[in-house]
Image (tube, rainbow, N blue to C red):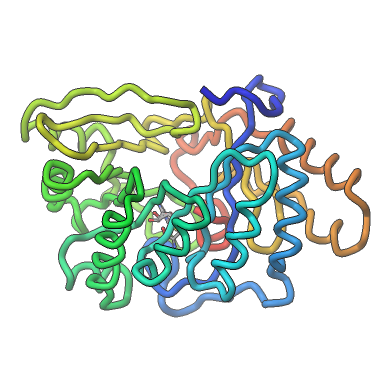
Length: 332
Ligand code: SAM
């Protein structure tokens, strides 16, 4: 169990950085990035790779041991593999993982693996080609599926498939996704739809809780709980259907929140440190870096972000509410 790192004011060890390297994406998922009306962050405000690497080294100095690359879609950023190679040489990092929509994965998977990345999360909300196109705004199911198969062929382990479950959109596929874990060694993780960003289409009618999802899957056969191996494994409650090659994970960010074990910090594509996905409080390290304020000052800022990490997201207290930044800009 990875327990090293700096503790926040609530005694949580913070050792995991989610790093958004771009807010651009080649899909426009209905709950994340609608096709029209998006203002991307201007290029000059996006951290350059060398700036990211510098900030990563500083966060490692403050106890970060694991990084997840995300976005936007991380694989669309030019020079991704070169950056990943440099990142993989940062001393003190134990693990680099990646969350991708899989569209460009087939061609990049081998290069990603060569950089030492072994664990990969691929987002896929439907196994039906037409529905996939409706949800994402692009007819690219085949590319994603080929990317998943390539990852399997290359031995990525585990391959996690993230499914945002929504009533009336894809809840009729919960059993199909669960069946996929019987035939393939994938970890399918059902994620509750979260009210992040100003255009997430969250509403109570389409919300389906992890408990409801569990109840559906439970009718399919014996479900055994799989105990977590490490705190770095994250917040999913994990289960296995009898005889399955893969696993099922349930991530109840709303109904079952895991703030008490949250070990995450986020660095947005435009260089802001954010210690809670749902809190709009951010610390602008990019300006400090570009104004030449020096590493000591930036280390202090990282320290403040860690110490002041909110105890809980409080989303359920007064009913769900939006946080202002889009998921693609924060880094999901
Ligand atoms: N482009 C990459 C991808 O598609 O995986 C990485 C970024 S994406 C923002 C990361 C994850 O956040 C995806 O699994 C996506 O489904 C999830 N996500 C985005 N908006 C969400 C929301 N409102 N509620 C729950 N999950 C969301």
